[in-house]
Amino acid sequence: MIRLAFLALAATSAPVIAQTPAPAPVKSPLLTWPDLTRRPKPTPDATIDYGTDQMQKVDVWLPTGTAHGKGPFPVVVMVHGGCWTTSIADRSLMNWIADDLRNSSVAVWNIDYRGVDRAGGGYPGTFADAANAADQLTVNAKKFNLDTRHVVALGHSAGGHLALWLAGRSKLPATSPLRTANPLRIRHVISLGGLPDLEATAASPENGCGVEVVAQLVGSPTPQHPDVYADTSVPRLLPLRVRQDLINGREDRIIPFVMATDYVAKARAAGDTATLHTIPATGHVELIAPETAAWAEAKRLILADLRKTK
Image 1 (cartoon, rainbow, N blue to C red):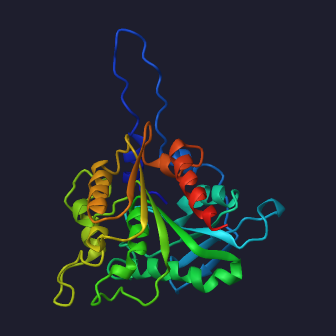
Image 2 (image 1 turned 120 degrees about the horizontal axis):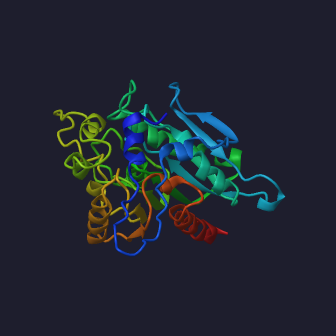
Image 3 (image 1 turned 135 degrees about the vertical axis):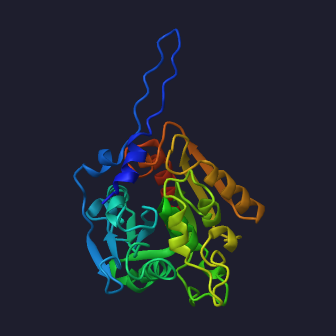
């Protein structure tokens, strides 16, 4: 479920229309969370477990019908947001765009993970869960007829951070307990209103998640882990050597726009290919609503990239 505080931020995010002597064009209000979540919810084709916790699951969305062919299907690893907090959101928040991709001949690997408010969440559990869930794609690719030659990771909000982090796992410090051999290779990341820089997020009272949640996510410094951002915050892993597209709404009242501009500048300075796509008349919910201009841009990028493998 979406927590009330998070709902309130989105519900009050409609732009103010300036008063002028002449009649001004009417602007459509921005979407609120209920505008999305009260719709009929599509369901996945399969769910797999990668652990014993009820959040350690992956939903699999597969193109069906003769119009989509027999596969193997290109695949998107999808990561939900919700401030890294299970009580705010789970993977089902992505069902509408997962269904849209399924109907466009793209499979979706929609992962879940333990949030900071759940036993075992935080550091290292939240990160280890995301990594394990992503790596299960390789394990199950043959079973579900998935093409892993060119995987795109897509994340929304806090999931944008995790999607980018998944792409940078080969850059984790050798001393990190999160470093593993042969992580899933991700060649392209799309961040929808993401929070890639945890240090900047922790220093920004304007971010809709609050500053305390980052401390819960990265944990307290210890002698074994003195720098809590070294293996958790994406800028510390730059360059990722992965194409990165950030899609952000100018009217997003939950994620400050500077989070995107500052990260893109850092990624480019490190030598990465990073592009910011600014979508007008767009808040935070529009980023994962299938009828919006923001999702149309994300889908365009996904289809153009994944179909290169055909």
